[in-house]
Length: 213
Image (tube, rainbow, N blue to C red):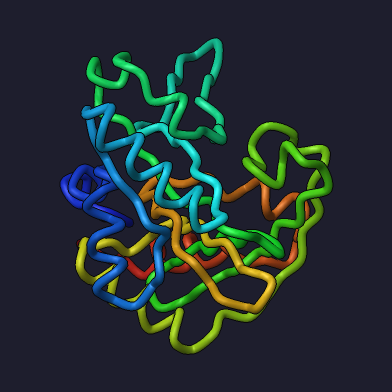
């Protein structure tokens, strides 16, 4: 059997809090994050960041709802301490500091090869979450800094992945900050906009060479 990622490696990678914890140990600089069902804890996190002049965002812990008829995702949302009511106790919520972005990067990894596409948002809504309006985006290929590439390679090795789609924000001062890794991430939409990106060719090469995991 030929695998790109073994299914058990995909499952092990799925839990976002674990991704963030591992990424932090590898120098990939994820945002300050809390996962909680405690409204008091959530409000305290939001107040602390608000006092430091930083906004807080809510992100879904899962990947949304996918059916044959539709795909529904929960968009990233700005929240504050006043939003933290008792409804938080009904399920775990993920809160993060909002990272200032010059642009975002979707970094697709196929074995030792890395394909980085900068995603430039041209509306307030897409600067918060680019998935809400793909028509407001432009793209370009960008190099991956050596220290980021080293951390990504270590992250892939930690989770036993050959393929991964990683999301980063690049701040106005040039820092790459890790958001998440999707072990089954989409990539063809990038190749439609950047035809020379080469991700499909790398996957074909891997399968034709009989990569096993």
